[in-house]
Length: 344
Image: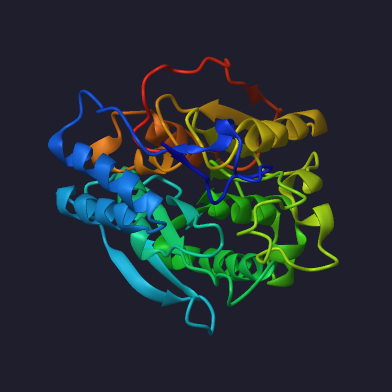
């Protein structure tokens, strides 16, 4: 059985390549908790809800034996959605000599849904590795259209940067990260300087940015559900990350899922990666085996970290200090695993 996807980029949602399968084979080798999360994830995503990620956050909180501290409801601006939760490393993590690395994370949801609460597992999981993690909300459609969510994201980044002394953090390891629509937000802030500069910041702050299953190249918008989000006669291709590639761009780490039925890796991450490399910028593009659009992110959580090496790749990116001296490229082999993904 198939149904049309709701955030398929560069596709009206009817082609077989970009449809979402609603039946999944059982996944061998996972514990009962992980299997429950898989089934929950499939059901919640079909219903357009976010209960799977919220449930994953609850399980992550329960599973972590030595959690750090979460400072919740931090206001980075004056509006209700201008809130962030800050996750600190646990006492068992050795403090790096120059301070903790920091990552500001933006959630997905087609710029129409999602919240930081559903993505608490991202904060807890990365903090357990030894990072300060800022999981930020931003305004959504219909409250705002483009570029309102970019303005909010930039405000959150500038606020986080100003908090580094309070967090004992390393200013040379300050990163952005996002999943799906949130990866778009991170990409635009990293590549198009006007958003951070409008809030008193600069992309030069960034040691890099990490995009998981992000849409970077989807103009013109053909998905009916997304057209109101990017409504405006004067937007054009300027709203696309691929339109803002340049040699001095912060290093990019692009992670994709071979079973992604929501955002095409080839049309988005691959296209952006190629443009970055052609411009002389640093870009790594990696496919995480056996993952789909949602499980690519979910594999950051402890119950699922053994399924795909998402956490090691993300942590490798977070160790980068400043910009590399030479441009490098990590290219996918192009091989596609034959096993079923966790969930799409």
